[in-house]
Image (cartoon, rainbow, N blue to C red; front, side, top):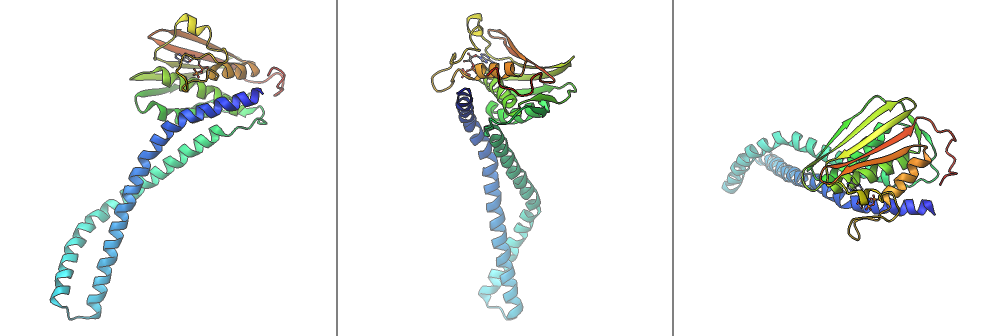
Length: 275
Ligand code: ADP
């Protein structure tokens, strides 16, 4: 039943992400579409010119009409030669656009895949952070600066799907806490047999009364439909299961910092006794 809650929360987050994704995908789609139109016009014109020149080769004698057509074509061909010079750049831009769309879809698919049987394995925390950031960046709509400060870390023993979900919950909250311009910073560090992940935003922050309840299930200050109040309680459970800790510091008007510490190795390999 814990799994189905996690699943519900994950679907809710995916729903929130979908609008941002749609927006980000729309941009490359528009210019790929426009570039394809340019390419099609160019090819049509090229075929027209080829056909006409074929005709000219076949019957040497031109009617006055054909002659006018030919002159006109020749003029247009000069214009199209200029377009032709832009084509490699247009095609490259389109290729990059399609690649970007593929990446976005891939990220979303990675994230929404729920694999409850996935167990603890050695995993690169920085990769989890980068993948999550790549998705979340689109939510910020360019108004938020993201910065990462990574210390060299070894692989840690964790459940990657769950770790992704924790990062996603905290980062989505952080983007929602920022009204206009803002910044989100992520620091990582190694200390002894633990790693630390510190995620800070300079958003609205929260008062003491709110801060005391954020890890409780269904506690939310967001309007209906915007928040489930489950993200942080699930994150708390996941970090506990990993033998780690999650804490928060926050100040109204200044911002919020979540600190996660995780052991490098699990004492009781992937047993789910605590869930
Ligand atoms: P939800 O986001 O659905 O409300 P969460 O459990 O993720 O549920 O968060 C609970 C509450 O914690 C939020 O409604 C909000 O009041 C508060 N909160 C979480 N992260 C932040 C943050 N970065 N800045 C300010 N408030 C936050």
